Length: 285
Image (cartoon, rainbow, N blue to C red; front, side):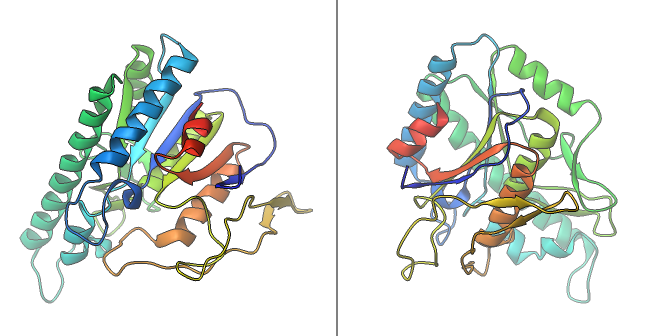
């Protein structure tokens, strides 16, 4: 499809059918505080219902993660959560804790809206928040599951519920003590642990463009990975320049592409497609 970007490695290992990341830019207006795109969310919920009807399984084969968009990013930026919970020369620890709590509360409000949209469309979606006990960052700053939370997630899916996770402020076992765990990073962690057949990134544009708007003229149909002699991979497709809002604390498009490449290295097909589009409906099934 001309309106989809695909990272297409070797055949994936059989596992959960799909991990889907619903991007914050597709779900919200990232330039306006807590602005939810109701129509896009509703259409995407219909696509999920159709996908689940297509699979027709007692066990839910899909995990959904959504970004924060204009929910959470403003608070995280205001309180400097990229630097963690450690007090600095201008702010004490209580101020940092307050920012952490406000960020978490904001993304939970968005999660409720997403879950409600899914429920309204007939999807048995349930919210699962990373903080405080589901996901965290380890001593290397890498996302990981807490305790038995992965087993709890798969049990939830075995009952037929579709988990809805989100980017969040989480416990961090580095010197930061607390930081942001992006939805893209969560998609990578879930991919490593669940080995889905494919991972789908729903965005606000048709795929990865050859340049940021308004200069972009075409969607890059494939990002090709080539295996090197040492067994590692290299990207042979020319990647676009980046564009990123000042309050975006999760890295912009190049960080997203980098995550997609890491997932593709696992042998999992990755698709980047516009949320609510016909292409998205096709990819989700």
